Amino acid sequence: MRKIILILSLCSVLFLFGCVNNENISNNTNQNENNSSENEDNLASENAIVVYFSATGNTERVATIIADYIDSPIYKLEPVVPYTSEDLDYSDSNSRVSQERNDPNHLTELVDVDFEEFEEAEYVFLGAPVWWGELSWVINDFVLSNDFTNKTIIPFATASSSNFNVSSLRWLSEEATWLSGRRFRSSEINEETINSWVDSLNINFN
Image (cartoon, rainbow, N blue to C red; front, side):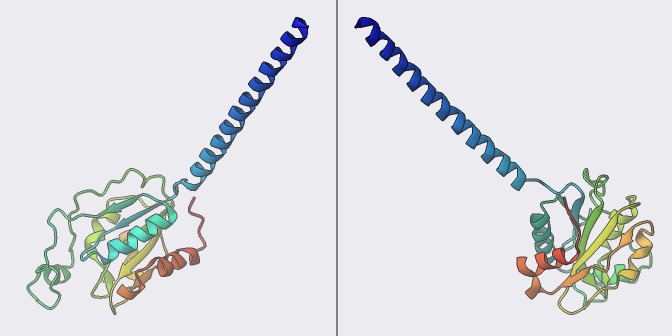
């Protein structure tokens, strides 16, 4: 009788151990699946970056939405001498932007033009406000300082009424492929409009 009780007790212990072990395996499997799912959701774009200059904050909002949507690195172009509100007074012929516009060699020196992910990027979203029908020349130092061979530049801009012509930008980097780009009014700076434009490019940002 004692042998039978001992055997039954041993079987019970083994049964309970097996249940606990299976539960641990199941939990670990579920955890691994959850981690795998989270990693897939957090995959960052490896072939695109967003670079922008923003004078009043509108272009920064567009740039941020783009970068969030494609999950890419984002860089802000900062002039060594920042622009003040007086500098940006387009109606004043003596303001900084007015004087720079009349200078055929205008080139705004930037704090940094060398960004870590630039070399590997195939696509560069390049944004700025529209100044007198062209993308702000603050971007020029960045473009002229980098090699855009085998890269595609996707310009975007912000302005209430003025559009920009990409043909005026090609001289900055003739080795790059320039897309036509898009100008956003302040009323169009929202995720639905901007993400829809990114989708219309039919580019796989992986």
